[in-house]
Amino acid sequence: MFDQTMFDKDPLSALEALTAAQWLAFAPLAHQATAVMRDRGVLAALGEAPSSQGCTIDDVARATRLSTYAARVLLEAGLGLRILWRKDGRYHLGKLGRVLLDDEMTRVNFDFTRDVCYKAANHLDESLSNGRPAGLKELGHWATVYEGLSVLPEPAHTSWHAFDHFYSDRAFPAALDRLAARAPARMLDIGCNTGKWAQLCLGRMAALEVGLVDLPPQLERARQRLAGAGLVERARFHPVDLLDPASALPGGYELVWMSQFLDCFSEEQIVAILDKVRAALPPGGRVWILELFWNRQRFEAAAFSLQQTSLYFSCVANGNSQMYDSSVFLGLVERAGLQVTTLTDGIGGYHTLVECIAAK
Ligand SMILES: C[S@@+](CC[C@H](N)C(=O)[O-])C[C@H]1O[C@@H](n2cnc3c(N)ncnc32)[C@H](O)[C@@H]1O
Image 1 (cartoon, helix red, strand yellow):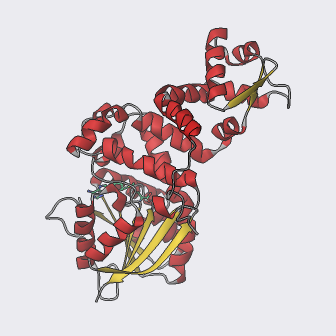
Image 2: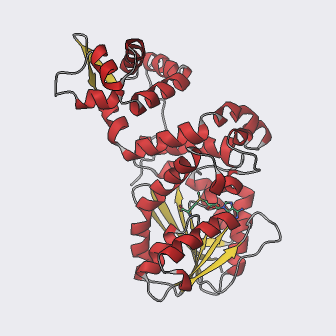
Image 3: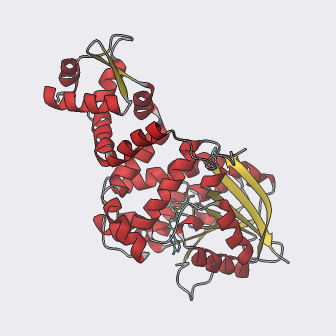
């Protein structure tokens, strides 16, 4: 169950607030220093030191081939960041350092913010003022990131897809079990991306047909994945730009699936897309929406990550979407004439599955 009291009071003392403010003031430098310590092996050198011995600055310089000066400024920055601790001139990896080194979610989030968002964040004010992703030009010249997904420069391409897949990969198995319990004959996967969900579903349900909807370049990647897995015969590919007012969705699919898709759009766009979904649905058709809502998380780290990810949507993705508060999102679902039948939190740890039918 999520914690509804997470943000309902001011949690900091005056002194804590002053400290937290300095973390923010120095956040860009702290972020880069942390990335260098991870990627140049400073954290690993400390982590590999025999327990309780720690390392001197020169030990770290030798192990990483950094100069003594470079090792010293990084290690001292790491102390203030609570990544490391020091006793008798010897540096030790703290719990935070261990998480930075070993926790996959942290690594994926870190790479995403550094490789996709860091430079773009410098254009946040302009993005919010104009409702356009003014930072996207740091990666390429498209109106939205979705047009450039398949050709993003490295390392942004790898980090974007790792970020997207990390979360959906964890939610898909639990969602798949639920789907298989009452398997549809034909399912439409809107915003199919690289086709991972379609592959899982086709592999699990032998009689299932899947329609895949996305922009043409991503759809081609999904086709290649399904062809490689020998599953393409039961797949239909529908290139549709859901933002084109003239576009419509193919009919005949009794279940429409959208995972981490509607958060890519503004409130008005979500209602317009759901109107198209409802128009394509046969009588008795179902709509399953898998989303991440910051206000339905058990842990502060998850809520925090989602709230900050909204800023990526502002300055990189498209300038007008976000990770929604579920009360805002469910209002849009209702406006589009859909009725929520079941709401299941904690799918894969963080997602909410919103099961709907067309309202009578
Ligand atoms: C965040 S990804 C979600 C991927 C996948 N469903 C998952 O759960 O991992 C959003 C997908 O929506 C697609 N998309 C974005 N804008 C679109 C549009 N206007 N029309 C169709 N697809 C779009 C993107 O290309 C991308 O594959």
